[in-house]
Image (cartoon, rainbow, N blue to C red; front, top):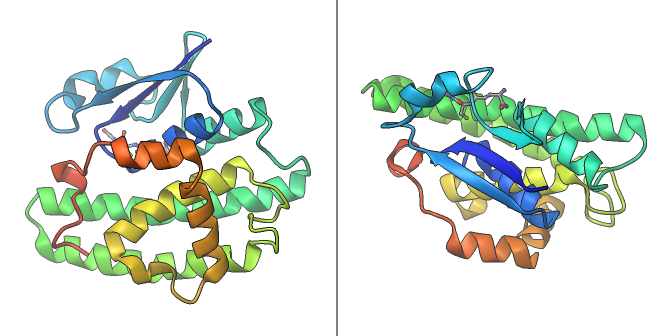
Length: 212
Ligand SMILES: N[C@@H](CCC(=O)N[C@@H](CS)C(=O)NCC(=O)O)C(=O)O
């Protein structure tokens, strides 16, 4: 049974789902919906009127963390202790708080509100530093977030860090060696390094040039 992913023509919240499907070696197709030209007509096709959506056996599954948790648990790339799993997911949601500000920055830029866009971009840097500090303290000696082996949370966190390193620069993880090593290890997985070399570049909406 192949999955179908629906997402905008962005990296953003699509990238953790894509990375996870690839690491899990799951067959999937993706429909990339142009945020500028197609999304207004397609919005109503989705039950919660947002993406990402993963179609599973004909049903729509929404919410990035819910989708990733489902995939991780279904294909057994998960910790089995409830408290550990819960604390790992805390990191995911902290990253989503930052993503929300990134999207308001991009939307402000589209609207021509440069002051708001720049203000949000500064907030992203401050909030992300706090999240990265917490990720660093949760990475075990084996190199994974609160686990001895890689889980779906590591894959998704790496997908977001990959985006942030491109947006904010190579110094992002300086002083956080465990986090840098986690990102390097996930990027080095064959499916992920292949995806990084073949994936589309930034579309105009999320091109960080000049904003951060
Ligand atoms: N909490 C949701 C947020 C979903 C969301 O806001 N998705 C954005 C793209 S990242 C979207 O579809 N925006 C279009 C719209 O709201 O019309 C998740 O994590 O999936």
